[in-house]
Length: 293
Image (cartoon, rainbow, N blue to C red; front, side, top):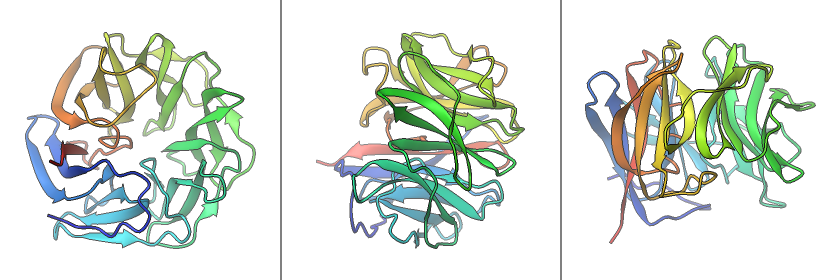
């Protein structure tokens, strides 16, 4: 069992965390490591050698061969949540860090090898979810004037662009591998459902229609499939994605249609908040949990 340094824990759920992978064709699950603390949201590096996850406000690199974790130096950004995203060339990482002055989430970028963060979004709260394939733009959910919508901003900072403007919550915006679409989830039709739009915000189209609450659509690197997290209708309110629930990871084709359940687990918040596809589109990494006695 792994024990991590937790200097300034932003959340303590009193859980044991299991870092797992699942084969998207066979459904076979493998536990890579067990942690006696909360870890969340694994990203797979494009070389297939590491998983990046957050724990205790810091980011860690998990070596898939040695099964050892190493902290990534992030300077003053030590209150990072589960919204971290790697740049397309994997030289940088963007995070949502809760700024010391007011505790609000803002987006920062720093080297994946470790280094000092640079503030990207002055306005808060802003919750990161996507990095465009050309490396130039970040996509995120943000609350402005009491409404949560989807925005983009140049990766070097500047003026943000609002893409959605609907009642309810729009969240989880992530680019398709070719960059033509942004996938997201929205409560605009009642339950939380998966949506897709053009990268400029046009042609917003509902993609799931079942009686569940569906969160965080992640597009496979080959662009063929969408993985997302599902809560049962009666377990949560549509605009909430809490921890410690019985959930499913589901798959559907990127052109829509029927889904299939890939895994059932105890999890929710922290399980697959970020894109966790393997580079070859054959596996997903995720975190499941068990409550401590």
